[in-house]
Length: 450
Image 1: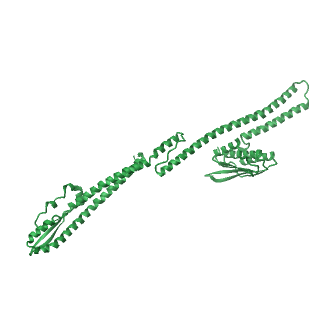
Image 2: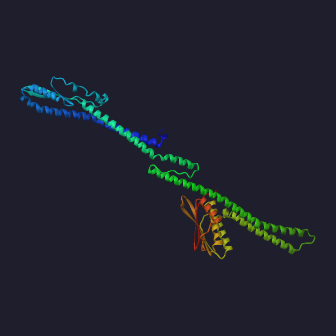
Image 3: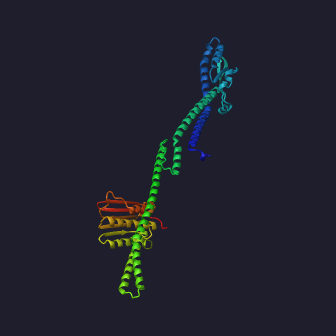
């Protein structure tokens, strides 16, 4: 049942129980202290009455009528509260013989709990040599009634204060927890995809902080979803661009090669159909042309395959594949000094991470050689631990001493694709440009082989 109660109901219930318990403990304390109070009051009034009697009795012998004077004194002392004084043999007056005022009479269980006991003390006196005695009798019923009235009064006042405190606290708690409903509604809206929903901070400072953090979370989720949408859009755009580029290369380069091969094959067919024996020079010419076209087609095919998938990456490993890539660049650009420091074990990062590292180095080198006019390029791939939690990572750094990027430079599809590929793995990509060249630094977390 407790688990089904709302937070407001739990707070109110705990407060009510606390107030009730405190009130019960206070009343119980008063009840427990009632018996000692009654006994102490009885002893006090009897002692005072006895001292008073012992003080005034010696003067009776000097009175003209000692018996009349004694009766007057007894009558006057009988008006005292909680005690009665009578001459031995007389009966106590009705006022003290009863159980007190009926309107203030405590319940029987309270009287039985307090255990009031009537105490009678005999005080001997002598009048003209005749011994007598006065009986001092305590009447605790009046004290019990007063204590009971005090308990009832305190119970009423305490109950009124507890109810008032409970109502005030309920109002304060209700106002303090009012933002919870707005928080719940806002979270439901965010779950439904309404990332523009916001909740007005209010209530207790802790709830205001939660409201502010929820608003920040909604904004971050909205931005993340928008980034995801833009990423998907750019991914589709990049895929279309790659398809268009491959189609253009196939049309512009593969087509002419096929047309030339067809022409030479047709020439050879015509020579074979001629009744005369073909000359060796003519055959050699057409065969040489066909071989040249086939070599060009092989290079073109290798270039296309390299764009689609690095040759030897899975078979040789990342280090060897990068070595082949760097060797090809050294052969094609002998005027540029290329320094390399490749420190990666085979299969350490995973196939996806290795491909991302390879593409990053490939794109950075392509940009350096095409646009930077650099004379020196440095390539570093090293392993690091603990940068991305429990996963290790590879730090890729490609630097050149070229002219750097222009202030209005816009990243091409190569850099955009490289950045998104790295971000998809949870890594980072930084490009720093100054008068001393461009440095591309990427942190690629290790993954697992599929």
